[in-house]
Image 1: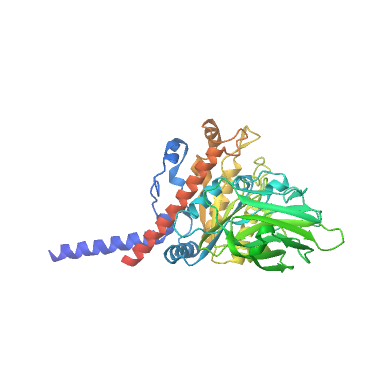
Image 2: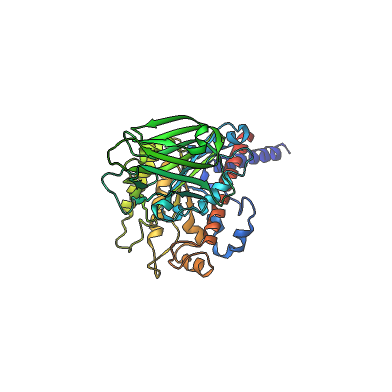
Length: 435
């Protein structure tokens, strides 16, 4: 009897040790099909590989992702802090459909954690597609610039990779939230503009009564305005103060407040690749102004939209690693999410085998830097799956971009993968308490 009890005890100890050790290795965690049941995804289940819909880890531990989890839990419990999320990419991000779904979740899921709108760009004034959840208007004539197609010597791109320029002596810009369930107010505003001496006064019309301070940071290329009350719209005049011919350059607006929660900055430029952001002169400078706690890369479609022979996986790897290093320079604790591009067809008819080569590179770098991967290529069904998504009304006729319904499916999948990440680290936390 004693031998049997000893055997059972040893078995329990050994089993507990095995599972705790196995779970400490993030690669061995078995995720549920859903973190939270979702009928929208379930209806399209035949098109989706749900086993891939998770933040996958390819190294034993990730102290950065554990740190982010801990900060999120403290934020939820104490409601005393902000977290700054960035998500950069190309046209999928400029549209800000699935990313706005994720933003809406992050800013409405936990009571009392409204966060702030963060960094936005007036794409409409640059004569390109603007996200539907906000709007900038102006009676002035603007010239728009995107770093993928124009790099004039007198423009130095920052985080957004875009700029608008106007030579008028009196310039008016208006901002308002549009179709959105989350509309965080702001009591601070950063305007990213010409670096160096700023030859404009700013007037806020009826909102001028609420202006308490204005700071110009000539060397950092932005001005910050503080208001006594929270606002949800903006009316601003720029009045030129010199007689010399000069133009106002705007690289973005950042809407800030003192509310706890998550700021989710979606930054996308149609046609952008990794090389685009690496070439933006003030990318690093601007990122240091508001460092990231979380940074997602959704770049690669444009990098690999070419024949198999012309794509250079090593160059893609070098560019992606340079971007990872750049982010970790700003915040060594930043949690980085590397997303695998979606399946696409070249010129609407040729399958693109380069995406799988990109995935191999992404896995390698995720393991090297102990970061996470969201494998949307695998979630879609891998090579050729864009045809099925198109046949089911989720992709456009170019077999690269999604329909609005497809982007909303993608947003729901991203939210569920994020919830699975939180559940995974909840489990890790509970196991450590037991041990």
